[in-house]
Image (cartoon, rainbow, N blue to C red; front, top):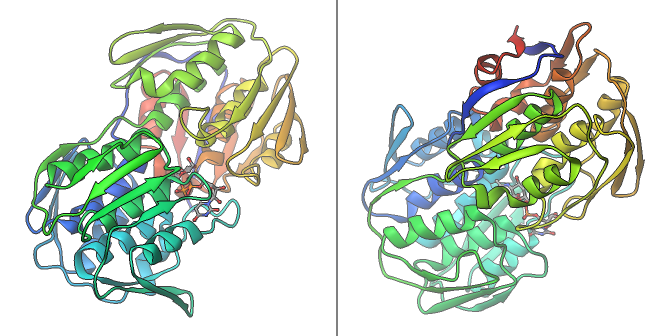
Length: 415
Ligand code: UD1
């Protein structure tokens, strides 16, 4: 089993390039299923989730080719074969196969998704949406069976604001008969990215990025070429790592607007920030103020960033409160930070963090963003070696993490 080793305490300096967004890529790849001809995705991140998704598409009969950061998907010879087990269980985002296969073939059998299981993550809103479009859905032995004689547009009000359900319904509705309206839709930039791809394929979607999305179904969709948006979560992680090590780093190839919630919090802590058109410079300072952070749906502070943010808050002079209103159980990394000497108390869905020096320890990443939190924490510790296991989680969402951090002057290596 691989592990990461870190000797921290060195201020990060230099420029880091941010790859395409994981959460877009894992929706755009299955979205390509809806086309009848070749889809080319540019700016694809180098991640294990992306590699697994490409294998899944080939298992359905698609021809998939990787050329550098490009993926060429020819879905013309695909079929909707049942996939109750195997690769689909390795990914959270395999749920997008349900909407995409339903939209193209009118049926899908997909094993319930795996991925980061920091708490039970229901997909009832996805299913409610498929049923509203006229599909019959059943759970048979841990696999979701979905079938529709004909998909018909409908009005769907999501009970919870869900990224996955919003995208899945856009996928299914893109080729349904008539108009689908998604109310209380999620507004994350990745949703706009998926709507942009689908529209380039010939779909008629308006309102992506707002709480009401209107999809006018079309009979067929065609191939196109699309460049994936930058990964705002990876970008925010490097911003946090730069600040936590009192470094000076330009995070390049980002859309600063997507990072507003994090830059606002960092400014409140007293961290120096310079915003350019496509990059953000983080200038670390010796002292940081404690702040209260609430993880919310977009455009609020992203839940995916609350774990690395928690590590940064251990560097503040005083007590901060970090509350996650999206996932109440996304705190499994906290016992590991405590093992590194952090002063953190967990109360319900809030972590109460009192700043102080951390110390090197052997810790385990329990999910993707937990892994990022431990890396940030390790980078602040000058004495001893921090050892992080569970690296396979980190590989799911961080493109060339070790190379990028080493390029910024960090002493980090993989064994
Ligand atoms: C996506 C992201 C994940 C991010 C999350 C919230 C991908 C592949 N993953 O996950 O990185 O942390 O958005 O920004 O893009 N819920 C229900 N029923 C449902 C669906 C969701 O109750 O049918 C609840 C969830 O338990 C959670 C909340 O709604 O409390 C938001 O979840 P959702 O936005 O769906 O997250 P994911 O799409 O799984």
